[in-house]
Length: 163
Image (cartoon, rainbow, N blue to C red; front, side, top):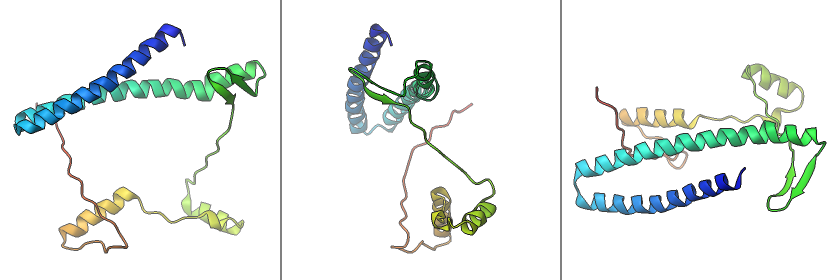
């Protein structure tokens, strides 16, 4: 990375940190007015800025992932390097990470049990599904029993465009 590009990125990061502090103060001031319109507009502005930052961060993460998974390994292999120590960076090593999935869960569980690997099987419940069940039961006047379950209710604000 060219030195001036790195310098520019560091300036952007510093500006974002300062801006976050300013926005925190503006949020406190907006909320202190108790003017619901001002608070909602402030929230909407912040939401839009956050979306832009998220988009930029995701683009940088894509570049980083491509460098980590493809470009750096290709360059290191081209130079027949397995690991290298670079001053100011540290030790660079190519590693591997394995992943596996079971498109047919029932057949996969059966194979694992038959081949002595049943110990890796874990039953799970999707957290969003459990939350939806808690909401549905609550609407019917029933609560998931504590301490077997922990139920949290979070209030959030949603803004939709009006045509």
